[in-house]
Length: 103
Image (cartoon, rainbow, N blue to C red; front, side, top):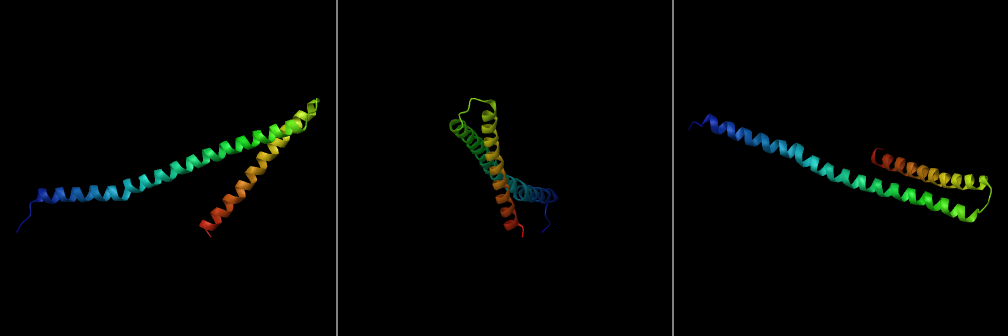
């Protein structure tokens, strides 16, 4: 029995559309979910770092209540040092995580 070329073309088109959805759209949806979770995590870690730095600054200002200007500069240096230390710890943790994924 001979098949109609138009029916074969429609079947081919349907197969191509199904394949394209399977291989492109669905993985992109999954990737979008991972990106969304990653961005939310990065935002929360960034806000936590800012609050930690401000807390360290405020603690240093409360403990070092000098009237001279060097005491004020020192408190900002302490706040900055806390943030630099936090960035270093997070950098080391990220390197360890990358080594675990890519040995």
